[in-house]
Image (cartoon, rainbow, N blue to C red):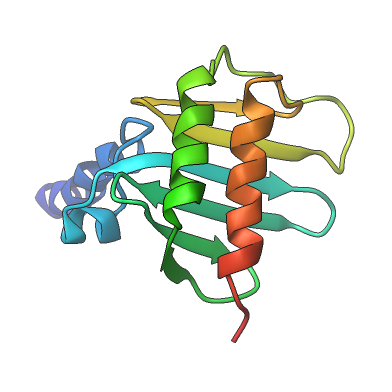
Length: 143
């Protein structure tokens, strides 16, 4: 019985870390000490899409796609200014339940200590998602 407890304890200690509060920084962000401004996750569809953009408060970002390695770059002053303007108008709202069927894209935004997932983009989400997708296309380059 004691051996069983010893084996189970490390697993139980890991469990809370997998259910972290939504907008906490990743291990890489904590290592650099950077505060996360906003994060977008775009996932789903038949193709198995998984894109992630994490923008830090200083304007530097991490771009990650399923089909390649993560890249880092800093947004221009204009891009960061436009993103911050759109974030001020952002209303996250409530979680949206998954629609019935298949081939849906799930958008998850983490901002201001909250994380919300949606399958349709509300009007205040569209400019933020557009800015982050545009940055992903501009700065992420396959290797």
